[in-house]
Length: 533
Image 1 (tube, helix red, strand yellow):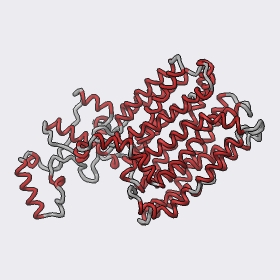
Image 2 (tube, helix red, strand yellow; image 1 turned 90 degrees about the vertical axis):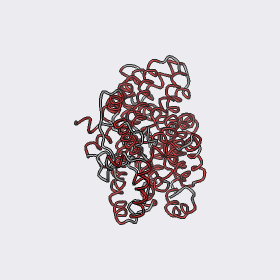
Image 3 (cartoon, rainbow, N blue to C red; image 1 turned 30 degrees about the horizontal axis):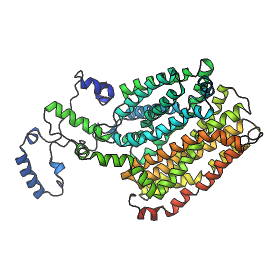
Image 4 (cartoon, one colour; image 1 turned 180 degrees about the horizontal axis):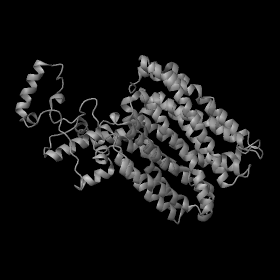
């Protein structure tokens, strides 16, 4: 009763149920069995009578349909918002683990890049494609996976697990490949496969956490997204030094396998409409009556393929082109993302070239980002508690109320880039301190901008986030490719990354005005928008 009751919508029980090794009983909707077996004619007659006598209570044909499968009241135990705290905590942990596992894949190979280039006899730019195309892959993946996860018959869990399985398999290919072309293709596909956790992880948090506190848990989940790519170089360096670069991918495969087993056994479906779809499917199988259905099943059945493809491939770019807020924050966040991945080019120049760190010591130098992430999350919690919470309770909350958070930390990004670029040779701790300022800005800019856009465009949030993911991944793909050339051409012998970092810093100063503009003029712009709420 325990496991089957609490985890009946896990992938493992789905498989066992499909082959009839497990049977999960569900109750019929609250109507009586007699009403459920009435003829369509008598049901229609009774509906008309009920509507005539009580038009307020029965204002919809759905309310009188005994075959409509919906939540059994506000306290339905299958509703993820009503799950026990322990089950919710497990889901949050699993999402953090999944995000960390797949996000590690981007940078875990970077300590071994020189060895890869030597073995395959290729230059630095070709070697860097293994990082750039991975990042581009997880920018393209959400364009497809985000809308798919909202389809009632698919949900989120299957996408997470199936893509993670193939992600794990492709790490075996990366560990055994014998040509650079094959490795680059594998890295790109791996990036696409890792994208669901990044695309819909926030949606999973929203499935199980009530709106007034969901930002707290999205921030907690985001710690995994930020920490993973900066922990990965330390693990990659350890494996490269102890064995060789191929063992980096074996390590990633084993981490993926552990995460996969945990999710298969203990990760329940969280998408509300998919849970109702499962309930309707079980009722159809249990009763032999195919008339049980959910509203979303009916809505999905009416969607044309052309309309779906338009939503997936056209709307994200249309909204980005027509909505100033979407375009502005896409560019701002994309610059931050590109600057973040530029550090993977700058770190070897600074910490190995100037401070003569070993590979493992350079991996430890990334820990400044982790410390900064904790500081940034603490700042987010204070802001939510002291500013957002009271406004939410009073009912005076507006989308623009999230923007002062990014306004308050806008100085930290240019400061971090200038500090990193011009304090090399002073002491190695100063570039590491600059990492903390970098994350203080970027972490809270992400939280602030995403919350603002989600509230402004609730109907089109998947398209808004897909456009943002595409933009930031394009920047993150491109920046490492020109990073070394930029540092070589702009740098001096004493300050090799000074002017290169400053160039990005100057751009960040110009973009820092964006949250201020939308804080003041956002309501007027939303009033003229065809997409905003």
